[in-house]
Image 1 (cartoon, rainbow, N blue to C red):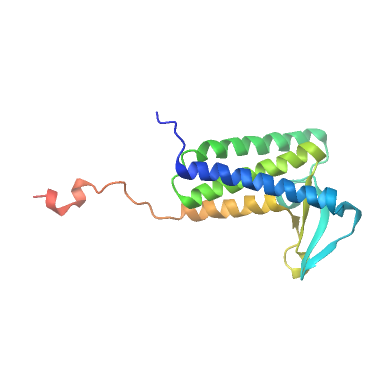
Image 2 (image 1 turned 135 degrees about the horizontal axis):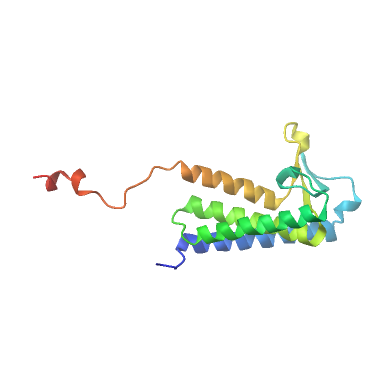
Length: 174
């Protein structure tokens, strides 16, 4: 059994690490530098505002949980999902597949770190003023969403055979 990691697999791991670092660095800036929890909302550009929302649920605030058991259950679930995706990523062969795996794993770990540290996920990207998107979210949520889209697009690709079969080769049928 070949246990080596493919080049796209390494790319997925690198992307996951980048998402985790970027997500945590920006959240640090939001919480510790801007002290956004002390402000109602900070206008950034047009409909984009930074608004501190302590999210006890999963992505985009779904399934809010208040109990400690639910908090640690969500941490465990996120880390298990990330571990499974990291396992699958080692055998990735396509760019969209590696992109999806890396983004989802990095986003899941980024939000798990928040939940373990604070008891909630730090959400702050607020575009509610555009009128049709009512959620406040973060970089990890965005990475997970884009990663799922990448995996869905990858699943729509047409399979290419590894090698042409003898039956399909007109020269071998004589």
